[in-house]
Image 1 (cartoon, rainbow, N blue to C red):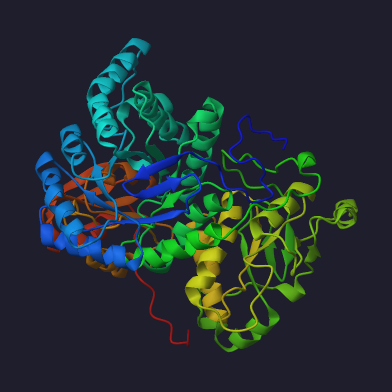
Image 2: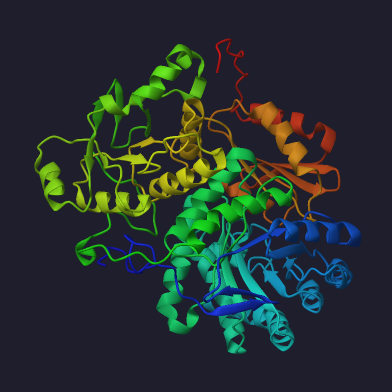
Length: 598
């Protein structure tokens, strides 16, 4: 396929084909190769509490989790992995265990004795994170790499000797100062950080590792993984390592599931991803059915047939850098769409009629345009005559993909965007086969978020229509929440909330709900809720304000990525957060509750 981008991450943007990788064994579980996409999660108990950890591992395994991660903050914590692993195996459970390591190489060396896999974060395994700004000369940079080699090589050799696997897991929120100062807080920096560690592993003929490129912003996450895969392909065919997918700090509830489906689902649809973790600020057990629902269709999927003439298609976007597709302005039912205008929310005439009596009280979830009255032109993107006809029109027209086609939604709309003139705005649909009976909300939510969210992150789409969810009000809420999660249309407070783990210094679920209750009416404000400092300060870069565990029962508050309040008692911290928001002019009082039925 021709492309304006210098690198390619996917052999064909218009059909599904899973990326071929080598096999990496994590204990008795194969990742990559011919294996299905594996589902994993992470326990939240204190690693020193053997009984609690064992109970949680067994519960996750029973729910269908195939790989379980446990934090190991220090060597003392890591040493107790021996007891946890022994008790888990004694219970007849053989799910592989993974040690999650940050900051402490000695903890990694201890953990590798007892568990099947070690996760290291290149941003903080050896490099320090102090948010220092300095220039590194080439010689200074080389000196730092040599220091990393000295610290990392013993772990590589131990994992090789013991048959352990490794994840080289870069996080957008925890790039080292060295990487930040040379490459910036970018997908390129994330890739370079991981590739440095991979080269050191390969120097020692160690290949039993996987990569991850996690971020809380789905656009950043998607770009980083695409760039990584393109870089691996460019390095050579033996760089075919498996990929672990995840959106960090996705949050809870509907929002967390939507954000995860956009990031993870988009990449799975392009054949990228061999193991996934859905990170929800909920009990870990609730992550498993979401991950299974995302992975399931691709585990059953076979490669699609090539689209006729694919080599002639030129992508309408750079897959490694977000830019909205250019289109002309249209006025439809009193709403402007196209160009740089707001992405509009459509509904059907039938659903509009069902909601007509309560639209005035629907707040931010109002329907805006009725599809049957929009004048939209439905096209089979494979129909050359139809494409030629719409492109010959002198005025811009709203276009969409025709229902009932045997095409994947993402591929169909990409093909449409590649072929119709950019001046024609595009109406996205979550499905080309709308259901005729009631649907399960999760079964509707995940494909809608994956399909529409992926296209929005590619810069495609000027309006959206959700029909997979049959309840009229819920379908509109889902549409708006997809726009919010994709960063396309911000209409409410955005939360970056990490899943709990053994490092967490307060009750994340309870605290997140308290913060939502106090700040949920603030439109366009982004608040990060972090249990500890591992990713917390780094993820502040994407947030306006941050609430981060600094010590047991003590909270640090951030503005951007700068800590401004320290060691606040947890009981006072939410109130102090709202005070901080007021100080920076972002506070408005909550509106009076609407009396209309919603």
